[in-house]
Amino acid sequence: MSPDIEIRNITADDWSSIAALEARTYADDALSEGRAALESRARPSPATCFVLRLDRRTAGYLLALPYPLFQYPDLTRTEKTVFHSPNLHLHDLVIAERLRGRGLAKRLLQHLTATARSKTHERISLISVAGSETFWSANGYAAHRDIALPGSYGTNAVYMSKAV
Image 1 (cartoon, rainbow, N blue to C red):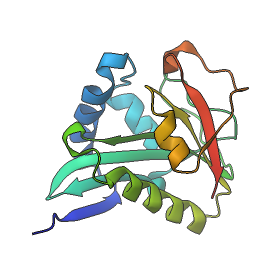
Image 2 (image 1 turned 180 degrees about the vertical axis):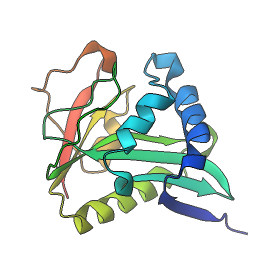
Image 3 (image 1 turned 180 degrees about the horizontal axis):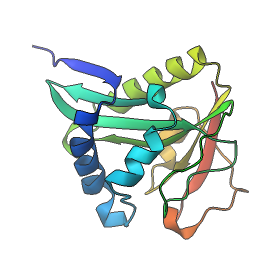
Image 4 (image 1 turned 90 degrees about the vertical axis):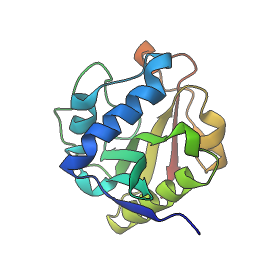
């Protein structure tokens, strides 16, 4: 029997499980932002933020918001500004560790790309953290090593983007 996979927009009931998943994923790298910051990243663009449910349980999530190209959220603060930009910044994509390697992240990325295209975004940017640059490169994102990033994103963080 194949698993029941659902990708949908985030609801208020999802935030506890999203915050717990984010904390488990980033705590060791000191990159965990906490629930208030995560919710603030989704507030400007709820239509581009998704939860992935597998057999009715939260298995992952993706947060993306319009942001000017070559700019990025400050991890030390909640998001206060709403940008109207042709660039969509993929702030976070997390899949539960036990479920990685099953193509679930790729499914979330495909869903985001289709949504970005339908909303006429031209590019998707992100910051690769915690050694994930290879994954993003394999999914078509190109590094912009000339963009300086603050230490709050960790060592070896790389700004990346791709055309929609």
